[in-house]
Image 1 (cartoon, rainbow over the protein chains, first blue to last red):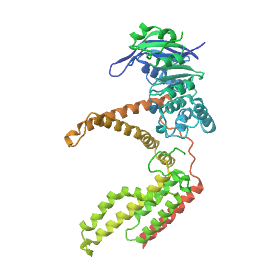
Image 2 (cartoon, rainbow over the protein chains, first blue to last red):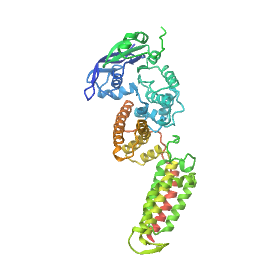
Image 3 (cartoon, chains in turn blue, green):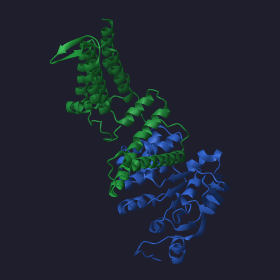
Image 4 (cartoon, helix red, strand yellow):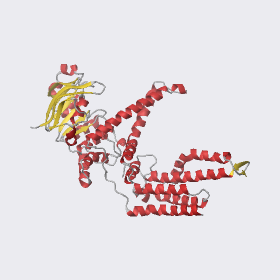
Length: 244
Length: 253
């Protein structure tokens, strides 16, 4: 198996001096599904923003499929890494969903029929064939999240990074999202503190705290370690038991 | 573009005017308003022709007359101002009913009344038959710089979200017993406006990050917009050319 994502000794501090990443090392194989768990402020989203070069490292490196994330490689990196943001409203900025889904591939230079096919394909993948003509502020939370996912899938990325996929979703919206994500043949990195979602989608998890990775292993093992979870302010929902 | 009922000014109908490309409608509306604006106020017959043409346009557009009348109330403040002019203007005065008014003032009032109403009527037809995103696309097709059209597009997209945040802030204030009656109680409103500005600014940064993530390099990609056909331009000329003719005749005589 080839390595899809390699992060080594990554450090980053925000302009106000707050250290967000403090030596992150992570390797993700192609096709692997990894959940990044951790309390609020652990640096999870900051790490995600490094994977496609929105933030550039102060020290350390990030490589995607062997290509290092540097200024010159950004166009190629952004083709390879799709990032779905926590607030779908940030992701859906065009007048309607169809145009939003077309935005990425159009930036890659696609036009006409080929562009139309990409849009249809991405919307079908998230079960949102009927969403194309609708303005995004008229969508329900679940529809909006799936539309945001489609905008990224239309870029046909190799690596999909999803920041808090289940936040603000009701039960049905969450189930529809899992159904859309499960069959995708992609390397998947899911940032979440929804532990059952991590268990459902990702065989492997890492736990982040204070800007570094403090645990890495099979999701079931990590979630079964009550001490580890407590140390990292993570909790399984009340009444939830692991089938192991 | 079937973008749904996205704004209150739009009348969901199927008419030839609805089907026109937005850039053609923009040129038509601006052409019409331009002709009205340059027509001398004394040419009352010209304004009658403009009103007739506008009425015809409204009926072709299938916009209910009641809707037009309701929307026309938007010009009420100007008309209110215009009503004062005959009383305060100088010059020759004539007796009307129980008082005397200025002749010059009456013409001034008529000028504002006629032009504001016709101008507003044209914009009601434009916005009643065109979704706002389409109007912005039309501006793009008319070579308005992409920077302006992008800003307008984002404003339309996020205005509703910002209004929503404002509503939530207000509810949060009212829930905690804030019920301002005097000017010196306005401080929380001012500080919440500041917070709203910062939140909008931060959202702007996040939207920009989302755009960069999808390969944005500084120019918006042109997406499936079918340009106005020759027939559509001819149809628009069918409105603007007679208006221009009327304006020219009115200016010459």
